[in-house]
Image 1 (tube, helix red, strand yellow):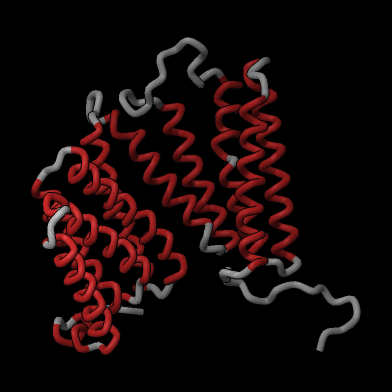
Image 2: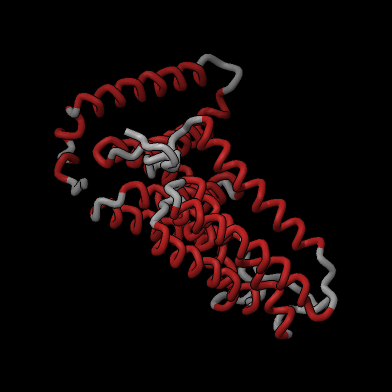
Length: 308
């Protein structure tokens, strides 16, 4: 029974899709975006000292607010403000690099996706490190979204160090490979029973894989890319149920239908396209029924996959 003067705070440490959580998350996003815009508007006078101080001030405020909220039991709003603080690490880094004279000056050619820029790459590494440290301290799973997103972006900045003036295809391959590694990390966390933490690695990992395959399929129309996309979508759909991953089902459906849409696009205007799409839709309904009943899982021996 609640006593007089006791703090009224949520006891659930897991975010939910309800009104308070929507307000907490999107409020934190707006605060972080507004703070970054303020930092961007600061004049880079005195070697960027004001950029550094303003960005550091915002980061400190959000970190302190997060610490206070976490200590008083407000787990979710405290966690999202910790993520907001991590999101300001690049802004602080830009100010610091201007201050020490390593940030490229005005008029200097700056193309980090074509030429390796150590100053920008260092900001990516700092963001990843800050996200991992914050996660270790707070144990709020959403913080891994910043780590996963920063990993996808930072590896693109590292590519020019190994490939001279990489093309879009090189970046697509990098996205695909890094995305696959993130998915593997998510599966490893699943094995350890950290399913909520693994969620963000699955989300951004599959996004990287989809981006890489989608580029080759849509941009260049490679036949092999559409076949791989169709097969990958089907396999991901099959694995979604035994892995208990709705994320896999969503990406699998997207890849499956993108490939189906490509193959029937030349038939539009006739009866073939709607018939194929109708058959594919009914097939997905039957697949869902089979997966839900467990019959297909047992038939393919997917029930033997290690699931926490």
